[in-house]
Image 1 (cartoon, rainbow, N blue to C red):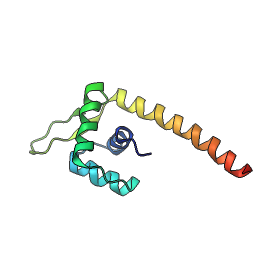
Image 2: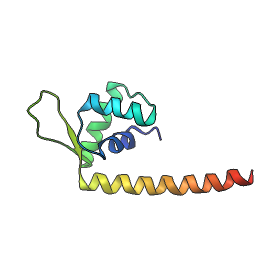
Image 3: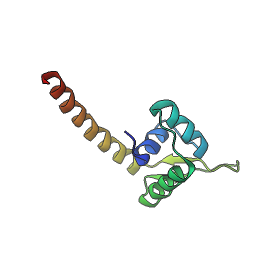
Image 4: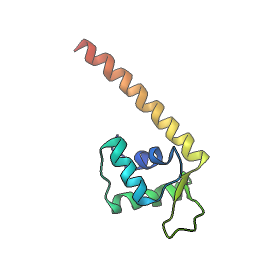
Length: 95
């Protein structure tokens, strides 16, 4: 999974984070280092689609959180990925 959209949604699935915290979290769980341009481009697209929203903060850093429609989208994508993984795993057993 290398799609920045899914990586950001996955990072926010366990709670709100600001940009740098997302970058570090994605590095830890996926081993992928998103550059700032890629990350903030994905954040902008996700916000426009209504899948994430800014959270209130007193800090200068802007945290984001997953919306209910973002959670639904992420669950749908994970279900699709699960189906692909099951097919590939079955095929590898017969290869």
